[in-house]
Length: 254
Image (cartoon, rainbow, N blue to C red; front, side, top):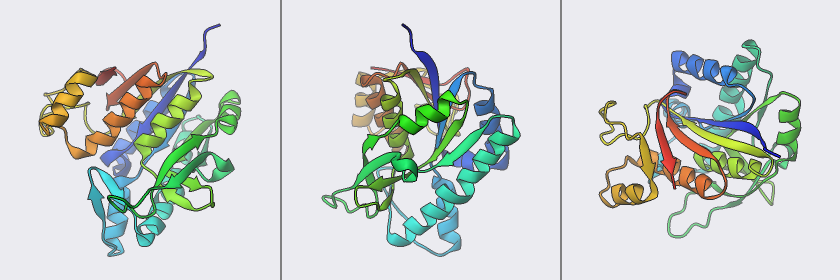
């Protein structure tokens, strides 16, 4: 028997810090047919709040180093205001939504990242996605909106890359659904030249990805998306796409 389709949308980048782009995201999600999950980061939103609070930020290879002060901001931004704005926006458009983080219902279990060779601070690497509650929400027509926070086995809340959460959640949900994963951000897809929107790479396979990596031709901010996307493809996700529209973008093929 064929599985029911599920669309998992991971939203990030500048679209989360722009009212007009946020509106486009909410319109897109509310109009996707069938079952769906929305996962979001909050990079730009977090950076802006850190700047206002005069808290220093540091990134390594597109990933945030999370000090205890940074973690307070992540919680305020991702699990608080931003998550509830997304939920309210979907509810307003007739799409019933619930806001969650990985600590809610023990949804996403993680372990604190080993400090060697780089100490990323209060950052978690995913151990398990518990799909029981997700399936319950989905079965009842509710869209889970999940922020980029996970929970350790000692019940410590940890900052976790939203691209990684999206990929692991997509793989876990493959047991029950035919999953399509869409990384939605402020570019039309993977670009040969990050400053030229017309340099879209419509299809990217593993070999070409490795070649681009060797040439250092991929923007560091794209690396977590692409690594997570290929992980999802290798582990049962039917389709992975990156871009800013349902019609076009970059499709990953293994």
